[in-house]
Length: 384
Image (cartoon, rainbow, N blue to C red; front, side, top):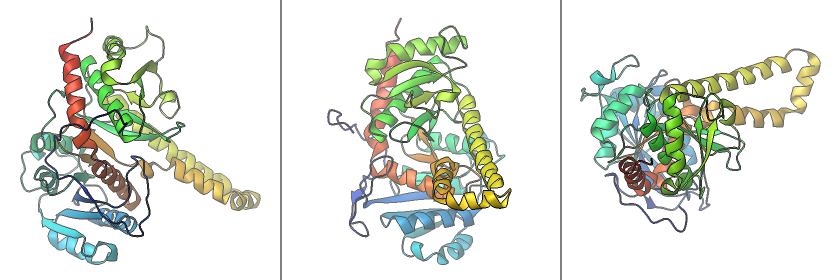
């Protein structure tokens, strides 16, 4: 938070995290510049995801090993979870298991899932609603998670459509851009895109330490005459609301700018954002697999691979989509992090890290009210 920014009114019901001594007393700063040792309890939907609870327990165990300030509430089949947790020494004394027999499947309709009271997803969300945990992490059905979160946690005043924001590896100094929406809702009109710009700018400003984030609107070209009619209207609104949102609008940006250094926040609808996200992940995997094949092709290439091993590992880490797994739902009265359904232990651990940083920094509590009120003010006083 910049020195001139005043703390926002607390809007979520979760308790404020309290600082405790870290394992070795050192200070570690992550993407959100969080001081190590801030005590946080995370609520985990252990039954969501394609790989089952074993991958989720393995992921939180990795996080627990790295961060002694983390505790967990696991929701799911108690008998199954007790066996899995018992095998992980780093989870001893740091996990509470809550039995929830219902599981939201990936093909279940959100309208049906949000009515079910017996699911691990709902139990996990309710722990945040009731103030027992500071954030929830789920690998489950995105639509069901959003619908259930909206019902149980409620939207912030002035927010029409919550959005999923993700951190995208980029050439910017901080190493990341913010992109939203990446899948919360496939629809978005000009007012929704304006709200996304404000929420994304606040995420970048207060989460990544940027005093005046640069915001761009994703389009098929940078020329003013290109794109759908609602994009042109949204562009005018975003430009005219720069002062209110405390950001700098750079205009239309293209797909190639997503990992670039031209902007800090990329705004788009959920359909386009999700396609871009999945395309980026697929491309990263393709490049990684192609490099492995190339360096195995001949004896000389194997020798070259050994000589370049350190650089190759650095590149692999840089383009590995698992290390930035996890999108945060913006616009809700509570912190919800959505992990990819196919996430393995590495991916789950990355989502847990993001949830910890958000909770430990008090991101939702400090900023959500300001984002919502600013968006509401912009809707009331529409620029002509």
